[in-house]
Length: 348
Image (cartoon, rainbow, N blue to C red; front, side, top):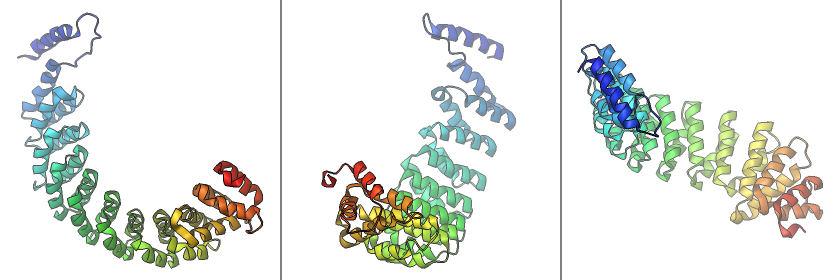
């Protein structure tokens, strides 16, 4: 069919599809897609690439078969362009072919495959992505880890843990981030081991991940990090202890509270507020809240302490009442404001 005849047929189809009372949607019909797809059979890869880009602007359902077919194009650039389009459109029919790309000799194709499979989000791709964690190209390993984290594949946890020992720090970093996202407690001990990683970024990511797994077995190792001379490590450790609501860390946190930078003191206050909010925190929880209450009298620490006590909500009410009764130092005006916001009848 010539292009002129195809355009004429397209115009007729448009009239038939539109019908009376329906707004015309120019070029959103199959004839337009077929015209755009004609370039895929051209011997010039540049024209095939242009055809793929034209199909990207067409209705997804109609263009999908042509884009999936283009995944087998002899030119890597055309294949990758088509793959990125089907990835963004979440066309899962492309998964088998994209998965085969992970064995392609061209690392650019393998990298594209790992990235696109993450976008497609099909769990069937997990086994191939796990195998790709051993790829010679570090970028392929990195992108495969990200894809597996997106897939939330539980069978990927142990293989990703293995990448904490990768020779590339970028891969180790993404592995720690992925383990945090997956949230599997099997990763805790390896993550604690990564607290000693030579890369500061990896250490911070591992600390953050350990603090988000909900496993307080990490508490002793995190407490030791409070004596680090690297500010980012200490900040990450305090944040992790707060996320874990690790009551056992209260004495160590109090020891550093007020004797550190404003940023670190604020982070410690926030952690103490989280610990104090735990119903079963007992003596440590009371100590955390009492420390925050006393800090209300310090102009430098008061803003952070106030925010932390507000975070503790009703758990902070007995401490604030004790302050108003004269048993604790603090700031009565702030205490009254916090009690008013808590709306707890015990404060009446």
